[in-house]
Length: 411
Image 1 (spheres, one colour):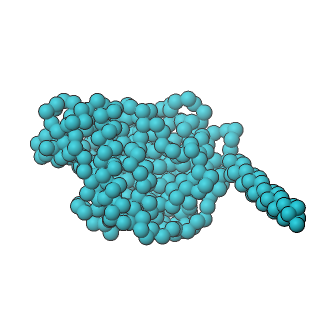
Image 2: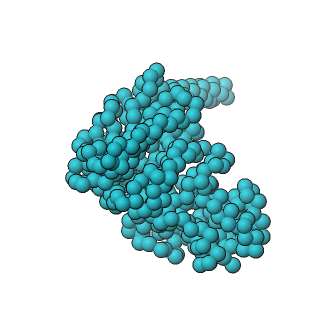
Image 3: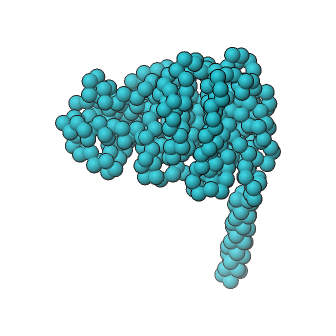
């Protein structure tokens, strides 16, 4: 009898092992197939109950690529971009259903909201040539910053990739954004995928009797099928700076005309095709010239939206380097100044989780300033107030973005 039981146990274990081995092979096969071809998932939004303010974006799938993580922050050591003081536009397309064209945009072509495997949130995919304009941006002041994430889905592995154009312009008729090139005043830059080691820049000449000018950028950073690029634009009156990831690719003192009321930002794709498509997400328009020194030393408080963190985490994103370097410079030049670093969140999710997250983020900022810039830790205290002290309404995406902030308070 014991022999029969032993045989039955052996057969059962063998069967389970075979089944598990088959499952492993199936998973390995699927993983290999996922590496060969990138999928655009038509997933629906997930509910956000009982989640912190940073968890509302869809989570990456099990096949998420490690390459999609932010570039090491030390690579950004020369990054001096500092976002404007107040966020007035924040577009992550989360209010739009997958498969739809976004409500607050206009185009003479077609596009749709998608999710991308291995990336969080919603993206606007533009699969056909055309002009695409966010209607909610209708004025661009003398001092502003504008950011967005750009991703290229490309099927052509041997040649180059189609161009992607962004233009700051003065449209006389905003109902026809496709006529942006006929306006007398605009500044554009064109991004081309290539195999060059570094970005190459080819400025275009300003035409007679107009304020039209632009620049062409060729970079291999769009050639990686797993990585998106972060584009940052900084206007200070006539001066214009453009950054591509950590690299400043443009710094022109007289790029924009002071007597022109620029009122639109448009995206123009002249030669896109089904094999090579561009996607954008996480648009941020902020206004106001950064004034770190005066705000902290004279007014006693500096509020920044330029220190960003990974999803549901206290890990600081690489593109925060410019803001951190700015506050470190003020502290180094004023060695007698002590500050309290205070983290804040929006009201999404559980208030206790948000409170804990805000405290951890404030502490991460303190540790970074000590580690990277040698600021004496005894000069910095930390605190976190979670969602308890909003400075804007939590009913809009831009309002929530304003409430997610780090404050430096002079003590």
